Image 1 (cartoon, rainbow, N blue to C red):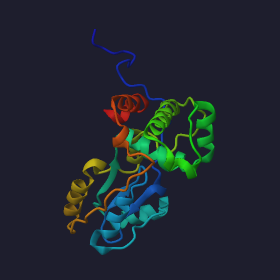
Image 2: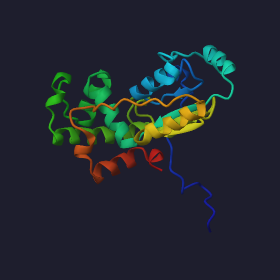
Image 3: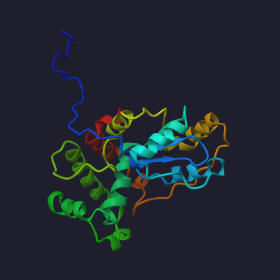
Image 4: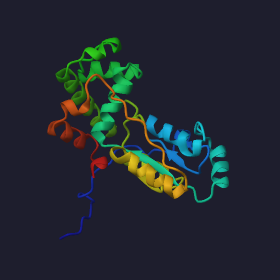
Length: 233
């Protein structure tokens, strides 16, 4: 009776597989640490540059240049930084949609999903209620998008972190998964394993017209859970 013949107890996953995305990797210049980037993290860029005062990290890897780096850095630690799905949605929505950076997707959200979005120059005028309604609309889009029901690409800014980690693991499983809410402690531990002095992180800048903490409630949390259940486990 307990045998689940058809896997009905498992979470369905319709999100396409992702590759290792080598171009998103960054390596510290003066220490053998490799960062697998799921999304923009300016604090990590600063941390990599500060390791042993090594200067700007190495970026723009190709398969050949990454193979050379791996060959000269045996036993290197690899790490990723993950965030709460609601926070990721907030950051992706503000950084890519409200700013107009992803203009075609922004127009699609307005036409097909009924989001009431101001012009990018007027985003700072949004009230908390207006921003919350817009973010809820983006969460509805996010759920359909990850299930392949929108005709819009699943961008790396809002792909599930579970799928991104799966793609990275095809090359080399990350040796450490850092959480954004305790990033300083996690990176301090990583620095100690490298035998270099810890680097103090810069304060994280607020993003968007309204801080997420100002509008957070259980309804938003549940919408994020419904949109990206794999990252909420």
